[in-house]
Amino acid sequence: MQRTIAFASRVAYQYGRLAPASTLIALPTAASRIGSVRSKRYSAFEADLDQDALTAARKWHASFNASQLPSGSTTYARSSGPGGQHVNKTETKAISVFPVKDILAVIPPILHPSIRMSPYYTAGSDSLTFQAQTHRSRTANADENRQKLAAVIAELYDEKVPAETGSDKHAKYKEVTKRFHDSRLKDKKFKSSKKQSRRGGDM
Image 1: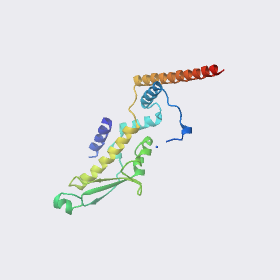
Image 2: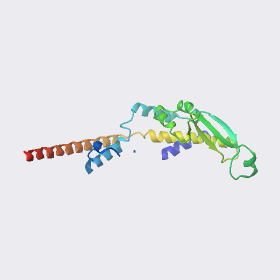
Image 3: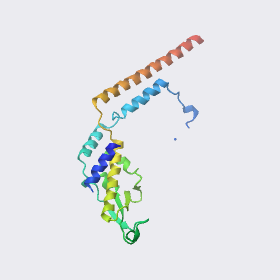
Image 4: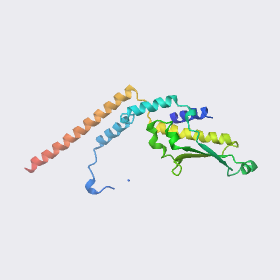
């Protein structure tokens, strides 16, 4: 969250489902479930992600500049709500449209699949659309829309690109993964031993 706020602030500053019973499987033991959770927790630190894509995204992030954002197109309309004659008589509400193709051209591939999932996505025009009317100035409202675009991109980056994992966390991940697999193997051997003892008793 802090990374998102910091990144967005920097950019803004620069630019002003039940399955059938037959398919159900036995639930893992408590220890196995705990091990699974821990394994997933540490693997989230990038172990299962495309390292080349992560490297490219981090390099982009390090050199990203607000001037790389697409200019889009902005139209103006009368603002709604209270505000007196200025709001009622002037068209200061800014409606900015940024084509997805232009956005994809300036962000790393790892972020591409998420752009069209944004709440600001408009399918009809295949674009992200933002509106701003808090300012009395057209320019200020248009700039606010660009800041919103920057915030969306920053949030996507924060969600998709984990911070680089230190050597200590890599070691911890390997340790947790090994314990998890050892636990599964031990549990599997225990169940196999129980089945064999039952078969011997029936004979």
